Image 1 (cartoon, rainbow, N blue to C red):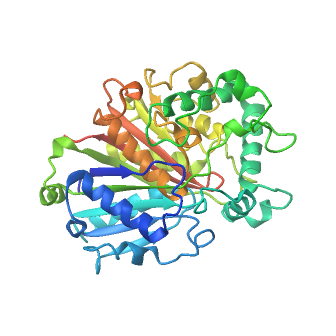
Image 2: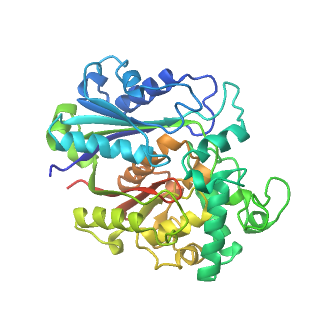
Length: 401
């Protein structure tokens, strides 16, 4: 297969896009990413766009047509993808596959989500209902907010099986808020929390579901935002005028999908997630010991723990302890979610998987903010999920040789 390189990464500040329309969001994502390396959109051969709530919250379909509305992209192979919260990662794979098929030498993957109104306000009840569409119909009954409820059950199962405590899992958001402080694009970079605050039930922090351990600070954010990656083959880099030494390579990737129903399968050891990660490592000729940069899909704190296990930095059941021991800090054994993760950086669903890979590229290139920068970055792993640990997109990224 052809080596695939990241030529450019761009993202908005995550949080509120106010009155920015969907057409403007997609155009800004394309144009902003192109500006990073000073090329016009006409230099791109193919494209893909990922979003999850474009119909239900934005009343907009045919996102590929909106991409083609950016001058220079008309008449080119473009598609829209939806894979729940893994839509961004899926958009990246869509572009990679087009390049591998020979449909072009350069391409752009864009992801976005617009979850708030023109005044920056959100309709929590509506958003909860819409996100619930990405679960099995048979598992929605009796759940006011479907996904927090499902992951509260996962959190309880993790604690019961592995002996982890709420305090252990709270170490994850505390570290992520500390990281987000230095990410200028992070939604929560003006907020800091202590371990005591993460555990104390008062003010904003409350149990989301009665009788289950998930708390507000264990949850990711409701977020507007967009992100884009320009991907290219070696020939594509020459076309773009970008030196290989200024890039990173997506050395391995994998995608797998488990059944959407949570009941009846081992969600603490999700088979598809492990398979996708193994595939990415095998393609890259690498193993978890080589990784010292990672971005994992911490939609809830328990997924920060499980994600640490999926990428191979901790054995099953030891992911939370990895964070407690400080090994996930930027100066630890492997800097995980140094961006702030979904919990503190924000979670604009369609942009999430793209931003994970882009931030990993910044780390490998030594361009991450100094306070979060991993020393001597070697290899990065990303793990992006959709649904109740259902769809998994994994990548392995390394400096270009």
